[in-house]
View 1 (cartoon, rainbow, N blue to C red):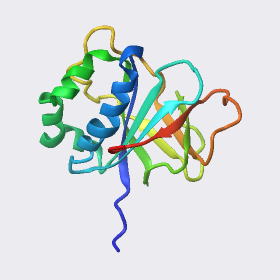
View 2: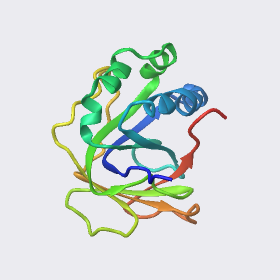
View 3: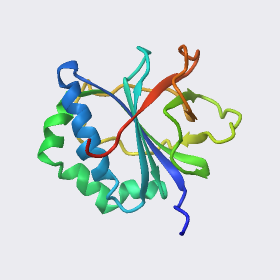
View 4: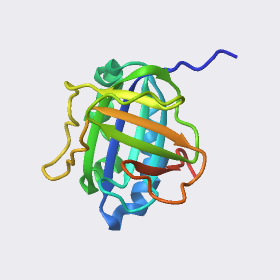
Length: 187
């Protein structure tokens, strides 16, 4: 069996959602949005996460492994941005605290393994951690064209270090955002 290609770029999207739309958001995101993105050639994998505990910043994080960052400029992906499904068009206004990072991975990588994810965003390159994603934010990445005023939230930093967690940590991790893995696909 041929080995799956490893990603050389990463799209990281943090977001929140209006509380009254949270259940619908999770259905839409798992059943339509993320699976639809995975139809884009060069979008190799996706993982969804929700914060384990209340923590500063957006509640949700989605990571997409990309063949390379050019995937986001190609027509297949751009068409999804221009021509949202009816469900996507309904959900967009309820999203908030959006932060979008397009990154170059420092080493090819598959999807993080585990029931959780520990994420740090840093201003300077950190020491690599075996098995963790290490990505540098690309400064010229285009913003989402449909964002309205007030939907954005800046997740600060130029570097992302993300390590899979085999189980839920007993307590918050100082200096990191900690997330639980969420399903992708029909429930």
